[in-house]
Amino acid sequence: MWFETLVREETGCAAYMIGCQRTGDCMVFDPTWDIEPYKKMAKKKKSKIKYVIDSHSHADHISGARRLAEAESAELMVPELIEVEYEATRLKHGDEIRMGGVGLRIVHVPGHRPEQINVLVIDYPRGEEPWAMLTADFVMVGDVARPDLAQGGVEGADMLYDTSIPRFLDLPEHVEVYPGHLAGST
Ligand SMILES: [Fe+2]
Image 1 (cartoon, rainbow, N blue to C red):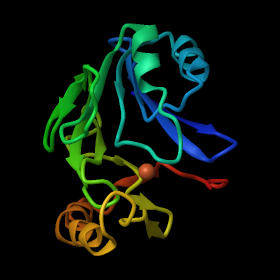
Image 2 (cartoon, rainbow, N blue to C red):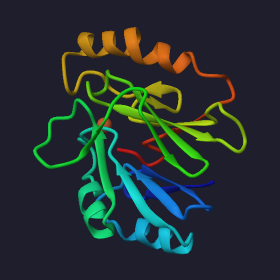
Image 3 (cartoon, rainbow, N blue to C red):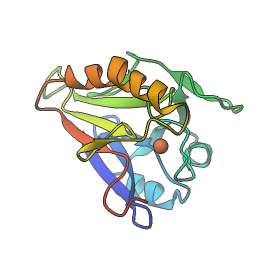
């Protein structure tokens, strides 16, 4: 398995690319508008972009997911509960995408947005348990993302406390966290 973080420096928005050397396939998670860095990385890794996943409807950056999927003839994947008019594969809690030895397990984490999904990363040759979680706009460094943008603040906080945070705390302690915003975020 290979794993890369691609940060849009202007805003601190982080996208992640994960691939399997054996199959030569890879996935892009939360790409921003300029898709060239993802195409370049895939080329460097001698990989084909097979899946492009958006974690939620972004208010703070323009998603490049559709144009990247189109450009690379990849499968566009979005949360089951997202409200969009374009064609895309819907991902629900518990779904798992396999690329050779790599497993990408979907976790529904409502609160910041009701549809938001995260991805648990499993490297099967290493073990059956996930080693990382792509937390998008759910868990940040020392914080969680705002619950009051897509719905009332109390309603959003209830979703976080009732559903998302228990799912996060249930994970083994060794799981590494890779958030959607890093230093420089607006
Ligand atoms: Fe967001």
